[in-house]
Amino acid sequence: MDYQLLLLTIAVSFILAVIAAPLIIPLLRRLKFGQQVRDDGPQTHLKKAGTPTMGGIIIMLAFTLSFLKFSVVDSDFYVLLVAALGYGLIGFLDDYIKIVFKRSLGLTPRQKLLGQLVVGAVMCVLLFAAGHDTGISIPGTDVHFDWGPWFYYPFIIIMMMAVTNAVNFTDGVDGLLSGVSAIALAAFAVVAMQATSIAAGVCAAAMIGAVLGFLVFNAHPAKVFMGDFGSFGIGGAIGAIAIVTKTELLFIVIGGVFVIEMLSVVLQVASFKTRGKRIFRMSPIHHHFELGGWSEWRVVVSFWAVSLLLAAAGLILSKGL
Image (cartoon, rainbow, N blue to C red; front, side, top):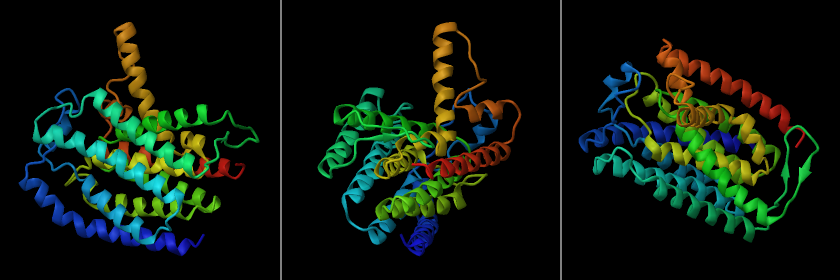
């Protein structure tokens, strides 16, 4: 694969995001699409109330235009596009309901689950039609197993639900998700080059440029938040890239920060419901460190550093796939 194509895609997507943001942010402000802040969260976040959200429009616009422009159109292309835009649409509806109808929870859990099942099912149909390999490899080993489509496709649906929600949990501190996702996507771009999937490589590059362009306006102090539209769209793209490059389990390593964030929520809820006690000061875990006295910038830089280490570890393991 031509790495120059990926660099060009990143550059164009970045420029599109940087151009779009100054146009979209004032519009979001005029529409009063402001962020609602939890009273029980870090007190430093209270001043963020009213900051424009749904900035995922910037990310998804830059990503989509770049991906459509530079990607080849093959079976991988359609899976990647459906994943990014399909899960992004779920996030968009969630944001829209929260803001316009003043419902703090947005979509109900059942509605969100149904949407994720539908998008996952469409992905499975596309993968099946393309004759996608249903085997799964364990990173860094020679272990490979294939339990057939009756196992693989339900696994894919569950995996995509886990990935998109894990990425969504990571959003919550200025610049955190933008940076972590750019690092994970960069690693998966390398994986895509190894797997010679042009569509997956361009998808990763288009999303890298979009989130880095968004980061210009999302770094502390953030002028805009991405909302669920952005986080679900990013999660959909990352999960789909892992699937089409046949590195499904490698996400656990490269996307380790996302996994940790999700586990912190699961453990917190389980502990509180079974023991009536919390493990963390607040979940997701980045808020635990904030309430422990860490500044937002320290949390972000630390999580970026961990993400870099995990991405490097993932690339080392991918050599054996």
